Length: 598
Ligand code: FEO
Ligand code: CA
Ligand code: CA
Ligand code: CA
Image 1 (cartoon, rainbow, N blue to C red):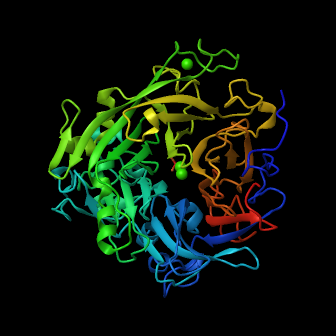
Image 2 (cartoon, rainbow, N blue to C red; image 1 turned 180 degrees about the vertical axis):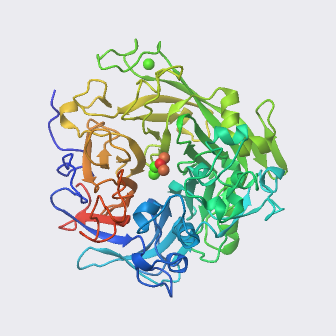
Image 3 (cartoon, rainbow, N blue to C red; image 1 turned 30 degrees about the horizontal axis):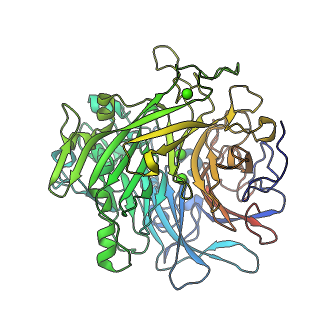
């Protein structure tokens, strides 16, 4: 039956229809501006963007490539200003360099790519008159972190033999961060960034442990190993062990050394998001984005301190170094059946069940203890996927962003897709991953026991099974399917101030462009999903932030379509025909200045 009445507060806008327009399309009554683009200068002395004469030095002072996760934090004492922190996940050389030869990259091209990876911090300000959000170049908090910035390795595996290299016999210092995908903002005012597909940067491995992480036996795609031997596993076997972590960045101290936290394990971290226990300890949720990989959480043992003094900040920056790392096991409470489009339900009428957080290892100030037979604690923290294999964790359909709802505490797990589910000898559909050949993905909702994030058991239920709502195998938390937008491949998630879930997509398999969607999580509108925007040709929607009066998205890899190059672009966004395509951050707000969706 059709639901009458208004959409949930925060979701009262006319949904954008699926489309293939080469633009960011927003609902009627909303407007947008490009906040910052790849190549825009942010540091003092950085030149204006000139793609035909780009240099590594210029790039190191400019906004990087392929913006993904976004965070916004207040700037003390500067009204109307916030610090935008962005991930620069990866580079797409054929779209960056005219005449790029993938078989023979030049040193300058490789060094530009190193400088285009990493993170950016840039202060942004709102123009009260126009509503636009624009970057403040040369602000003293602006910063670039690249593939060559020095990082400190912290936590239980720091200094381990597994992390020592010829350049760093201490096993505590590493240059750069790579493939930062999603992330989170901590309650103590720092940002977290997941090192995801780091395997692609390393060449020439023959080890089984590297194979489990997807590191190849031959040359890497970008050939960086020709220019720095640390990317050649045959020459520098442990360098790859120094990537695949959660990175913590302090946007308020531009001189700080960012950290890699080994206590959260090493895998293809999509990101990490924090919920505090009642006594102030951090619990971090993190997905390993690979087909048939696992969902993790870390429960810290140290309490957050309030305040902004140097000593307090230093204490809080150590919170993710001590605690226990767990992996999730999901159990259905009915005999497993597949969501197959016939409308058949499990015997209890719902895809739901219970779950267990299986401890893998505990880090303390005095050392670390493994909970996995046959693996040392250091091995658990460095070869975390193998630890998950050993304890029988549940193989999931690409766990991407995982985020606790700040209003309800319930945890939402975006599972992007898994076309290999149930194919051949692969794991078949189970109650928590209920669709074989899962092209469109789904979202689970977890409730920790007693709603305490540190609990070691949880209940779960299916929240959303994505796809065309006319497909009987889709599910929108029970909301009438003729009143929701089609959605495919949920990836990043965020919450608005009302507790609605916002979902951005990557790889829409329905033939239209990726976009951003809002969905109510509670009340009688629960499951009412509406599309808020779509992105240009070839782009993925990333890093959503939904504030009271503004939505921010990162438009990642616009124009990334087979056969595209600088000479043969497949998108004219954002600067128009004849201009190089540029990944950019976009701000959206209501024309009349009212709150989003009210
Ligand atoms: Fe970089 Fe899992 O997306
Ligand atoms: Ca059930
Ligand atoms: Ca992602
Ligand atoms: Ca998120």
